[in-house]
Image (cartoon, rainbow, N blue to C red; front, side, top):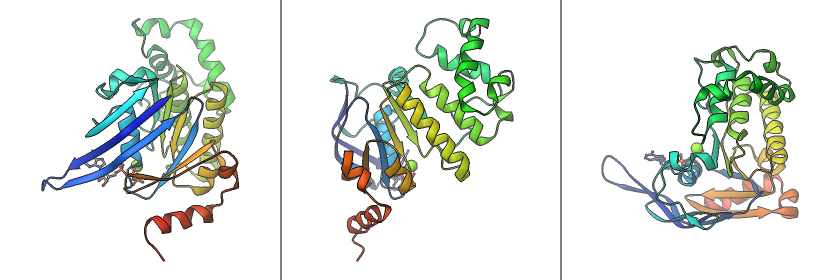
Length: 255
Ligand SMILES: Nc1ncnc2c1ncn2[C@@H]1O[C@H](COP(=O)(O)OP(=O)(O)OP(=O)(O)O)[C@@H](O)[C@H]1O
Ligand SMILES: [Mg+2]
């Protein structure tokens, strides 16, 4: 389980004004949760993910992984526990090197061995096995440079890389926002099956209300750094986009 206890995150602007982004945030993520996270631009969604990943130090509060206090661990110290996919398909993979080399790097994560073992012939079959179900033909293009792939193909490889070592938590920050609707759906379905097949715990940011309702077992709504809705199970299944828009308006004081 992952737990945030009274987490506050402030940023100081160049004019020394303090921006209180996360406000006394408490959150328990149970093993196996697939959470969708929605909220207006600037509500603190990415900051929340960065806080969990350790990319930003918290201003106050605690972050616990299975009861262990990781608050002061930097992101690279938590990296073996966390897989991440961002909005920009050019992040997450290395464009200049091949699909195979990228997968080898993902496989090596958290291992002390050199890269060479992950590039051995025996792993070729493994990489092909992972790539084939994507139905993108990438299993026959292992030697191709990542930069020669489309954004959707690249996000698919990134997802695979982020889940290859079965992280304790998968963090997805609008990872389909740059993709066309059809590709976006494909990547979301791939996300779902990777999470289910590997029994992963995941937190996915999206601006698409329908996707937020359709995917996962739990939905969180963030408004001005506070969780204003935490809906799971049957209540989540019953939700409509209209319900969510209404909640946004209520939170933002719109009549
Ligand atoms: N590295 C940073 N330095 C300073 N301020 C930051 C930093 N990252 C985020 N902020 C501020 O924190 C607030 C929340 O930003 P955040 O990126 O978490 O929002 P978001 O909910 O992810 O929005 P969006 O939907 O636009 O991605 C914003 O006011 C932003 O300016
Ligand atoms: Mg964001």
